[in-house]
Length: 539
Image (cartoon, rainbow, N blue to C red; front, side, top):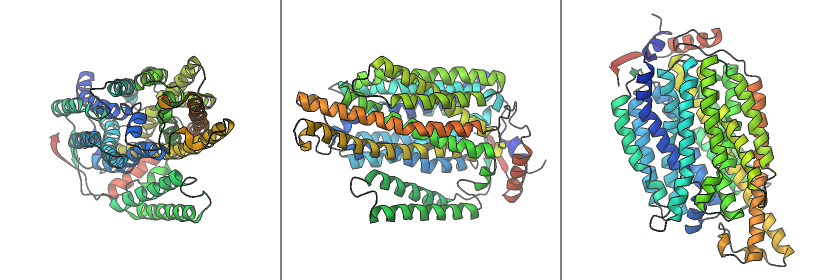
C-alpha cells in the first residue's frame, strides 16, 4: 500500500443507509442549533440594537463579527479534522457556540454583544466545516447529494423556525430578546448526547503543525479591510489618508499571508489546491454567493420592521417564501443529483435565479406589494438551494479523501469571507443611502434632518410623528432596494464562474481514482508530509 492510498483507506467508511442516518442525526441537530441561534436573532436585531442604543454600524458589526470569526476559524477546524478525532472536534465546536450564545444573552452593550458574537462565530466555523467533512468521510460523492438534501432541509427548517421563534420571543413581554440566545441551549445539550452515542468515525492522526501565522495574517487583512469599508464615508472620506493607510495595510497583510502560505509545511489554505480549475472557480462562485446570501438577506428583517412597520413575528413570516424556496431546491435537487450524478446544470440554473432575484429585489420600496416581494424572495431561495451545498460537492468530488477537510473548509472559508465583506460593504451602502434619503425627504418637508429622531441609532417608527415616519420608512425601503441591486452583480459573477467549471460525474466510492492532476498532487502531498497512522479504530 502506498502512502498516497493509505489516507483513503483510513478515512473510507462502509456504512448502511440506516447507520448513516443515525450518525448524521446528532450532526444535523448540532447544525440546527447553530442555524437557529443565528437566525433567531435576525428579526430581533432591530429591537436589540435599539434597546442597546446602537446605530447602523453596530447592527452591521453584530452580524459581521460572527461571519469574520467563522471565516478565520473554518480552515483551522478543517485542518484539525484531517489530523484528529472529528467527533471530539464537532462536540467542542458545539460547546463553544453555546457558550458564546449564553454570554451574548447577558450583554449590556453593543460592544459586549459583538464580542460574544465573535465567540459564537468560532463555534459556527467548526460546525460549518465539520458537517461537510464528516458527511464526506461517511458518504460517497454519488450518494452525497441525497444526504446534502437532508442537510439543506435542516438548514431550511432552522432558518424558517429561527425568525418566527425570535419574533415571538421579542414580542412576548415576559421573555424579551435575551431569550433569543438562550433558546438553543436545550437543543445543544441533546445534540451532544446524540453525537456521543451515534457518531463513530475512524481516527486519523499524523504529525503536523497548525499554520497560526497564516491564520493570523489572513484574519488581520480581512478585518482591516472590513473596518475600512464600515467607517469610510462616515468617520472619514473615502479618499483620505485614513483610507489610504487602511487599504495599504490590508494589501500588505494579504501579501504577507500569501508568502507565509506558500512557505508553510501545513498551510492553512493550501495554495496547491488552486491549481485545480474546479476548486478555483468554485471558490470564486462561493465568494459571490456569500456576498449575496449574507450581505443582502441579513437586512430583510430590518426592512420589514422599519420600512413596513411590521412586528418581529410578522417579519419572520414574511421571509417564508425565500426559506421555502431554499428548502424545496436543496431537497429536490439533492435527490436528482444522487440519481443522475450530474450537478453542473443545477449550479448554472441556481446562479441565474439568484442573479434575477437580487436584480428584481432592487426595485423594492416601502410600498411595494408584498406578493411581488414574495415571488422575488422565492427566486433567491431557489437559487441559494441549488448553489450552496453543490459547490462544496463539486470540490469534494475532485480531491482525495485525506484532503476533504482542507478542501471543504476552503469553500466554506471563502463563502463566509464573501458574507463578511457583503454584510460590511452593503451595510455601509445602506447607512449612506438612508442618510441621504432622510436628508432629502425631510428637506422636502422643511424639517431639519435631526428631527428624524434616530440620532445615529436605528429609529422606532412607531414613536415618530406621521410625516416624519413616512420619510423614514421610505428612506429605509429605498436603501434596502439599493443594497439588493448592489448584490446582483455578484450573482452574475457566480454564474460566470460555474459556467466554466468542468463537470465530472460524481464518484460512487470515496476511494475511487480521481483526475490525474489531482491524484498527482495528492501523491506529492502524501510523500512530502508525515506518515498517516490510524489509531484506536473509531471514535
